[in-house]
Length: 326
Image 1 (tube, rainbow, N blue to C red):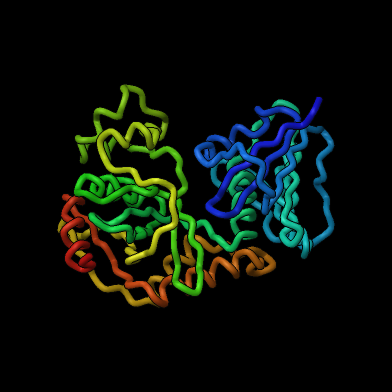
Image 2 (tube, rainbow, N blue to C red):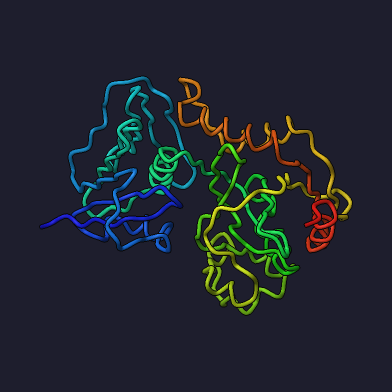
């Protein structure tokens, strides 16, 4: 059987995925499907998926991690210098060759690529092109191409706040993952185009989203809504790198009032790094060091604030517009 190859344009960094069967990469299409390209372009990063029962589970190198990861279970990470290995024992492995810009995923027959492994490969591909994935929401300001990044640990209310701002004229780039690139002219960002998970509590707080929702909720009381569907009720931005106007660290208000307060750049950097930079048994890996440098470049030049969100998250829109006049 002839291998099949699909390519995706990560805004200047093309990643190619090759496998014997298309259904070996459904996870890539779920995350990057709207970025798929049909024309022949030389990739900047290659991924080869091999379906086999022969997994390379004991590579040479230093143990960087051995433990549980959310959702996916137990794994090991091995730092071999020029190669980094992620191993889910008995299930699947990936070997990432940073300098050579390629990765090989080996999966047991009839298995699905795990989310942790997928994101690590996309992370490496982005890094090879000088870009870095950050766990933040991103929205354009009304009547402006500039955007604000909203950072918070999971469960703090990024999606709720993002949708509330979108109801007030902001444009949604992403409610969860933004891709940053540092250049001499400044740091720009674009949003990973994937579904938005709307919690039952968010739906109750923001009834305008109800036309996008069905009657079925998952075990986490969430529904996944496509960007196309959301685009019928709010402005969803296209996938394009844009300048950043501010970084907002999201917090819950103690008294129910919404406030926008200055945040020291050092505190903003610590908060971003705590949620986005992984430290293993061997310290910071080269990719993590480069991500840290991008975060440092971001907070060095961009205003940083704490956004305390109260009972009416839409109130944040006026505060942001006042602090960041177009």
